[in-house]
Image (cartoon, rainbow, N blue to C red; front, side):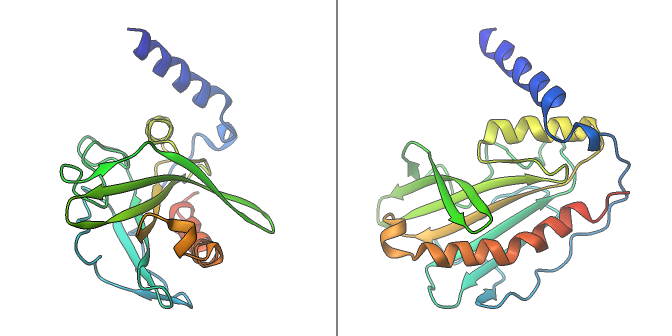
Length: 210
């Protein structure tokens, strides 16, 4: 009971004090998410190579890019237009890897600074027998302009937006084949990927506002 009480309190706080209250009740006319745009330095690919197995039920569209200079670095953006049972932005079976086979250490936070501010990500390192480790940086963005790196908070934002008819969200994943992320990947490469793609993502999840 205590856990549910905490969830209810958090939801009330988000609904009542989120920075998007003024944009809460907006009718939306949905159009399909567009095809991935051409981004310099990134290559559009149809799917991730093994051992990745994307599982995002009922996603509106998934954009997948590989970095042209670092072939071990990928960017996966998963778009959802509505939150519904079995097809949620955050779900127990959702992910880039088959969670039954992969173990992951305690999640951490990671911030990549740029001239205008900071991009924040949740960071997890996965490992399994016979495979190299995988590092995944994730964040969630919503049509109501909220951002979070915490799955539970993302779930609550999604519920709030569904109730307020401002559905539309994207999960952004920076995926790297290896564990020592910043030792093997120039932070500027990740910043460049996110900086170039962020406006395109925002356009997709906000363009239907009326």
